[in-house]
Image (cartoon, rainbow, N blue to C red):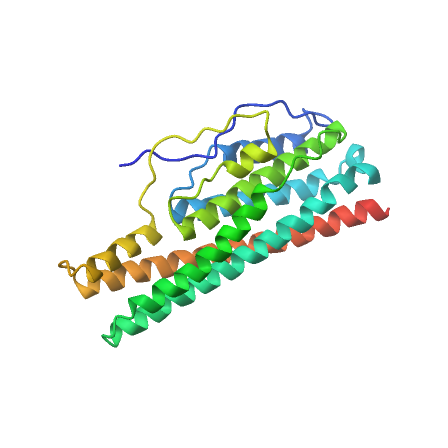
Length: 262
């Protein structure tokens, strides 16, 4: 089996209000779990989304720490909160469009029309959106080096969220996208580990099955349908997980705005 890819960072000190504070430790623990998590398959991505939800629940408590309630400090992460919401919305649309592509292909196979060309055309449109989003993410610059120490943990949360979002986009578009260009951009003082080979995920399995049909290789229609059904279920699970993250991001931004307006 191919080696697993992981969200792995070299350790960097995070300066927090009180490192021994239970809320601080809870955020650090969730960050560490996500940094060491796998992202090669839809199941691991779903696991990451669940972990991200837990992280934001910890962050909500963390924001109540008296030492962090400084309007000037919070201003530094407000723009990031909007960016995360925008990216999350784009990914929701991408997953929805991709799921529709799969459903349309399943329907065509049941009708025995095997309209693979329409599927590939739709895939190209989705991939174009993904490439644009990834290109936009690469433009994200680390402009928060002068933030006060207690805010740095929120930048860590933002960077980890974006890394998971990028891995989601790469999962849908295929294996050629780099999952770590964004992380390298956000945290230039860190070297990102990206070891091993790409694992064959559900999207790639569908591509291989369709290639077999196009090249007239022996493949059972039922096997193709099962592969498509597995991909559809994976996309649905990712959609559900991302919907929870979207709600967390909205709640997070409201909390930041409340702190700013106090």
